[in-house]
Amino acid sequence: MRPLIVIGNWKMHGSLASNQDWLKSVARGMQSGMPAGRKFAICPPFAYLAQCGSLIKEHAIAFLSLGAQDVSSQGSGAYTGEVSAAMLKELGCQYVIVGHSERRQLHHEVDEVVAAKALQVLDSGMTPVICVGETADERNSGRAEEIVCAQVAKQVSVLQDRLADCLIAYEPVWAIGTGKVASAQVAQDMHRAIRLRLAEFDEDVASHVGILYGGSVKPDNAVELFAMPDIDGGLVGGASLNPQDFLAICQA
Ligand code: PGA
Image (cartoon, rainbow, N blue to C red):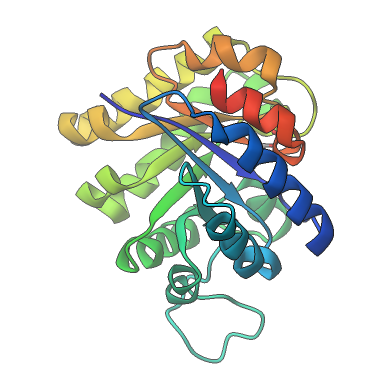
C-alpha cells in the first residue's frame, strides 16, 4: 500500500517573519492529529531551510518533513551558486524536487540533468521528487502521453531499479499556477500511463513508486484527485503558501 504524500512547493516565496507564522499555524493545525498512513513535507527556498528545519523541531511537528526545490547535479566543487545534495541532507531535508517545469523551461534543464540530480539525491539518502509533464501545445496536439512517458523512460534508463526509491510528480505545465486543474480523470489516466510505462521496466518498481499530481491543487479539488487509484498525493504550489489551505489539502 502506497502512502498518500502531500508536498508543499513554496517556490520563491516566504520571509523569516511569514515562515514563522506559517509554521506556527500548521503546528497548531496538526496538533490534534493527522490522518494515518500519510506523509507531509514543505520545500521552502534554500535560504530558509535551516530556519524552517529548526521551527519544525521547536514546534515538534512530527508529521512534517523538510524538502528542497532543487539541487546541483554535481557532488561538490567550483559551481558558484549551486547547493549540493550532501548540504541539503545536513540541513535535514528528506525530499528534493528535481526537474520542475520552471527549472526545465527557465534554466534549460534536460532529462539527463534531471536524472543526474536524482542520483545525487539518492546517493545522499534522500527521496527525489522527479517532475514530468506536458505543455498545453503538446496536449492539444494529442501528444501528452507520448511526451510524459518519454520523460519517464529517460529516468528509467539512468536510474533503473533505484526508481523504486523515488517519487514522480505529474505536473501538466498548463495547470501550474494557472488555476486550470487537470480533471481527476485526466490526471488518473496519465498516472496510469506512467505506471504502465514503469511496469514495462519492472512491475515491482511500478507498484511501489508514488506518483503525485501537481498543478493548481486546492482544498476543493484535492479530495477527488486523491481518491483516484493511481494518484498518491499532491505537489502543491500556490495553495501551500496558505497554512489553512495546506492543512485542508493534507486532510483531504
Ligand atoms: P501550483 O504549482 O499548485 O501553484 O499550480 C504546483 C507546482 O508548480 O509544483
